[in-house]
Length: 295
Image 1 (tube, rainbow, N blue to C red):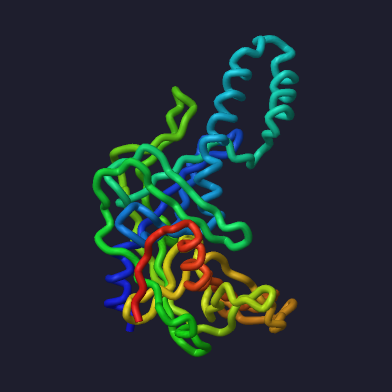
Image 2: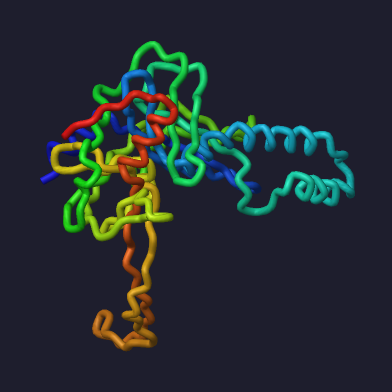
């Protein structure tokens, strides 16, 4: 049903690969998000929480560099550990604190001098502009549904993104105490589509801003397009909500490998939430960003 549509959406949908490290650790943790392009001038749509991560990366990395510089100046004596604890309090570091975060925009443009963003004041929606590029690496742009009422209960739609990332072109440089991108390893993750039925709509103050789907949006798909069987875009995946079903099992005895075992299970329904195309188009118009529509 969505084979041709996925091929079409893949021409304008791209991953944002991330690597991060937490305080006290040397393990590099990979993650991903998604964006999709709306014109050939380097404008793309993604989630506000993705854009905030991008915007905060430099500050996080600079904060850690200042901490390292202060830590290197500590005297090497019996008061060093106490002084280090003081620095940790000053810089608000504890186990699990993010100290490094780096992003890689895969197959978007040849190069860029900077990135401009506009974040929606209330919705999980943002616009990104790649500044200073010479050539785009995406081959088409999203076409939004022209009909604001095209998404109706019972309609099947599909989302595309980069869940379950497989890229491993990164490393921890012990000598520099830094995380780095490398030219070796797997540089791409496979795209991951997931379908769902329109169940309900998301609204506020009598205004619809989103579409609810019967299946979850997966981690890594945030910022990816929601589209029909033709590849026409109806919205953007931004979150998943979890509804308690009430089918709870507590100390239920079952047979596992022919042995009795007691289990407890609390069931939830996981529903994807997408920003409606009409809300995206309104935000694009507000910032005078060109986009295309299709009936």
